[in-house]
Amino acid sequence: MQSIKAKNSAINTVVYAFLIIGVVIMVVPYVWMLVTSFKPQAEIQSYPPSFIVKNPTIEPYRDLFTLIPMARYLFNSIFVATAVTLGNLFFCSLAGYAFAKHRFFGRDKLFFLIIASLMLPWQVNLIPGFVLIKKFGWLNSYNALIIPKLAGAFGIFLCRQFIISVPSDLIDAAKIDGCGEFKIYRLIILPLIKPVLATLAIFTFMQQWCDFIWPLIVIHSSDMRTVPLALSVLSGQFSTNFGMVMAGAVVATLPMLVVFIAFQKYFMKGIAMTGLKA
Image (cartoon, rainbow, N blue to C red; front, side, top):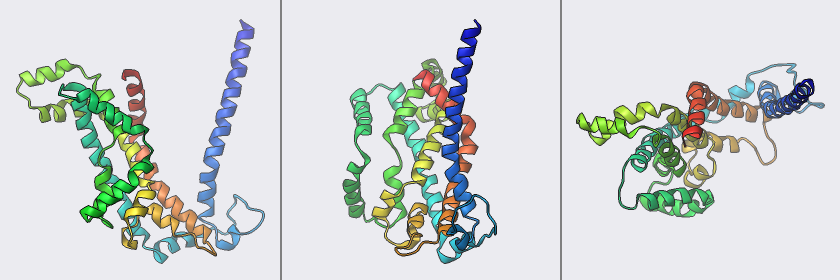
């Protein structure tokens, strides 16, 4: 008995050691980014590098918001990411409800095609998407950034798998009471799928916030740039203000951190419940 306990204790020690190493590997770059953002340029380029800030300064942050229109870029990213997230929550949950609780011609085949699209690399859609956006006259506008991303196969699949677990008796009872389909969706389905919606919101917001390739293709003017595009122009060909770059990275990270903290409780619950009921 003691040998089994000793063996389990040794295994737990090894597991915790690997977890600690993993945490350190993941956290150290963020700590270095934060520390460097408060260093003057001369201290950043000094050797050997150090985690200690000898002469803290907010000059990199001041330069970030004065030398480039960073406030405008933040607004663009927040507006686009929020609009795309809200669109995904509505359209994906609505489609998930239809696929989970309604029978119509070609339902299973259509759902199979949606799932099959997940296997296609995202680069495949770049050229057709650009051609469509150009024909619609949406280049260099919010429409180009928002409308193509308003729904996704992953979101539809996630909502559908969760809504399947909702008892059909609730829907039948609501129909008997005179509720229409959209009222059932609004009053019964949406309150029950809050955890999975929070999960989808976090995934969608973070994915859209970090999106670089699509805005790079459809946006040409500096006023319409998003934060990832703004960060890319901070690095010069011959010299780079590393303090300003790190300050931009810190500012770009904060909204994602706020969103995750705000939805953390629902996120964990949604992951657990979706895995159990799918």
